[in-house]
Image (cartoon, rainbow, N blue to C red; front, side, top):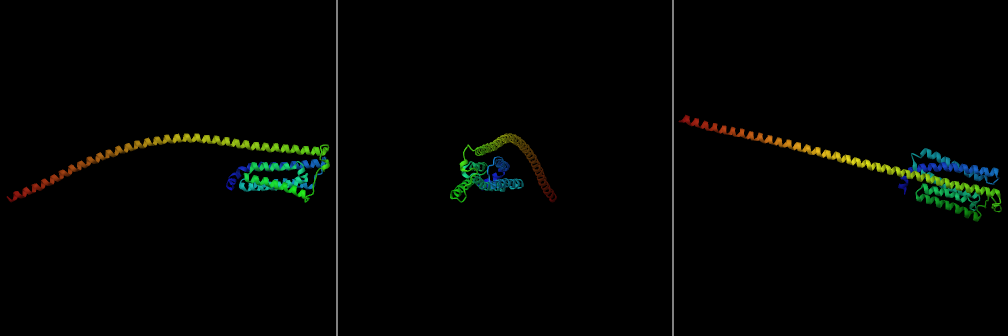
Length: 285
């Protein structure tokens, strides 16, 4: 898993950059919405909620700085830091959920964005860790509220949780619309990433086919060159063989000539010896 994660880390960098930008935009938009609902409609959001949203936005900005500094050189470290940020963000979201009404309101769906991102970005093991962490955070909140460790906190008291209360109705509708828009935005991001991957696969396939065609042409070219070289070598061998045979014939003729000269010389010497013997014999007579 670690080896695969190492290999895939650089491929995750563009997606992580998009996710960081999205988180900063969502945090800023949520902060502005809180200000609008508090100042214009008098929704009693606590100051701690604003502080938590600011922390998330600042964390996203710090993560973007870290990404720009180390994204290219150390992609694996960036991916791990991004994963750690998502775990921390899930913990902060749990506190935000508490301040906007706990599990009695629409806020728990905020976890879904991180979980969807986890399964898009990370290997399955890390995505499951993020999912389990979110479940543990939310379950802990429920237990702590049930045991009274955290007092029940309501943006709208139970008596006002009805659709005859215009503030509750408007706030709930806005929250639901934001959730739907966020889901649509995330879905569009997923579609964009999927489209890029499909386009990348198409390009890879075209490159593979082009490489295959080039390889076939190169094989034909090399085969032709090899055939021509073979033919040239065969002709060279024939020429050298002919030259060797001609040289052999010449050497044999020279040998025969030398043998003839040798025979003549030997015969001459024999005749000289015989002649000397006869002269000697004649002198004695």
